[in-house]
Length: 431
Image 1 (cartoon, rainbow, N blue to C red):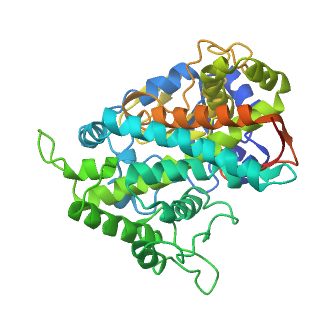
Image 2 (cartoon, rainbow, N blue to C red):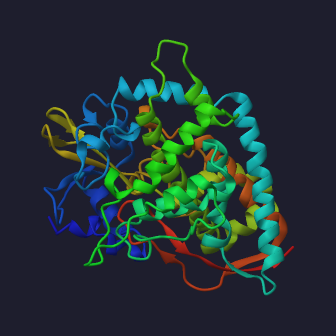
């Protein structure tokens, strides 16, 4: 087999995922061996059915055993304490507690807040750019998930850009533009934020920062989470995290301080990053397909389906790892116990067996069983709110403009995990 290590090289993705290579491998079989430059290699699962097979069977394909990042974790005992890297029953308990915290009242309030924020962001875009130009990725798309997460977590809105920096450092650790992100300076934040920023890591004598995928690499995030938990236990609000911390009844043990801190990490980083890239990715899809943009303008009722197609076509999270707990067959491939098994959402979302003409962006595509939010017990808890954010922002954007077009090439994130958009120059004409 030809060398496949480029599939895990972050530099490959600065020009977009290698769709042709994934299609070639997918045609050859549902699973392919991929070499790692600094690891033992992994099985890459390429087809939709086999990706679902892996994700719905945590007993055979564990999140806990080797965690969920392709590269082996440097601090595995700590990483295993995160819900993302747990298997049932530990994962099931925390997920039940979180699910109960997203009460109908909380979701309704969040939905109303999202719609208002989306309208305000487009208002600001149109009022603030006299020549009809902006960087959609940073000026518009980055703020909506930050404000939404601030509502979910009960984070004061003036501290929200801390989450922007944390996401950059964790998700963009392979990209020098993001690895030392320090947009938030603390001057306009709360006392909690200032205490956290004082602990922000600084480069060593050789310019290196601690690995942000370890607890030691994110002392400012954990300090903020601890202070926030103390405040919520003292004066609970109506936000989801206050409800979570207040749960003391039922059969499930309440959330500990350590569990809350790890949940805060998960929401503040993973909850922000997927949508922050899904929004500009969806706009790139529309701008790359003018006929689809025109169809959506003519019939706004297509927006619900268009959002699903944006998620499929862009696929913000490209891969996730599991580890085989026993010898097992995936497709026609024998996988041994202990092997890395990496599902490719990018490939599965373009599987010709499920999606007709998969490279075509079709806002009328139905059915559309895209896997961008995962599958099985780890299906994304925030999927409903993410869809609301995408629908709300694109509805306002299309309603308030008559022309949308690229004003230069997008700049993509150097990452083999997240299909990120660092900059998206946009030219628009108000409607």
